Amino acid sequence: MCLVNGKSIKDLQVEVDTYISQFKEGYFSPLAMVARLTEELGELAREVNHYYGEKPKKSSETEKAIEEELGDLLFVIICLANSLNIDLEEAHDYVMNKFNTRDKDRWTRIDNKNQE
Image 1 (cartoon, one colour):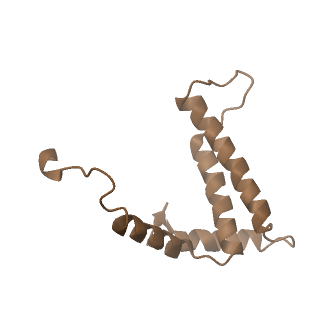
Image 2: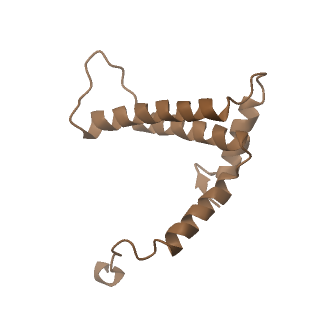
């Protein structure tokens, strides 16, 4: 079970669904949510560039944290998954299995013996 701040991914999906369900409009269409993902990813990229890249913020720009942008991105990902009835824990397990099988020898492993 994946936990974020003491909550499972399933808990996060239920929390977002409870929030969205109180509005008549409900979830946006999948295509609109992909557009929102693109927008949020762009905002995250901008923040990362300000902190770690060559483009510092202008003094007139408001301070936003990378954590806030990641949170926005996570919210939209959960909305998209919920609207398509996708269990993100199952999706995560599928991807981790893929990495642990297909890609198991792709990267150079750290030799734990030398780290003691």
